[in-house]
Length: 234
Image 1: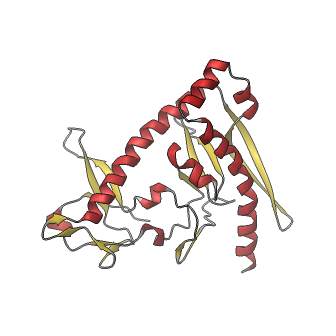
Image 2: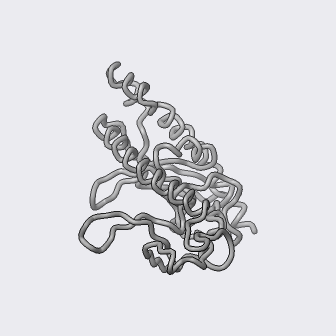
């Protein structure tokens, strides 16, 4: 998929409209990043796990959307099913980008090549002025960036507390055993073994519900198996 992020400008994008991101066809994303604040909602529909960047060693919270590489069992030719849609998708086709002027300033950009961009949907400008729709989308994007920074600090806290454990998740799909490797989970035994002050700190910061939502979401792996079996049978 071609991505061409350019700064938003009324003089260039005054005629552009944007369709609902849930109509985006994303069939090749087995995982999608999540911010901490959306984990409880995502966990109600899909497994939420952590992955580790092999180059940087950084951990990231992700929604697990499929059982094989480039497989998304929640999206099809008509867009997303009636499930939670990660905010990284809901931000499409917008993104905050760095200006190429050396100042480090961030500006709102749009992916001109996105299938969401065209002559259908919501207008971005009216008579050279931002529409309420565009202002809402920009506010959502700014909020996401701020929450992503909070997410990074919380994941760093998990690392500092040594809460992650690497696991393999196995599931049967019509007699075929599928193994998911490279996955990290919060180790509940390590969580329960924390010193009282550290555990209390997690509770006071509202992080415990997020951890328990993540652990509960692992039951959704069976849902992926069911979805895959249904898709294979179609």
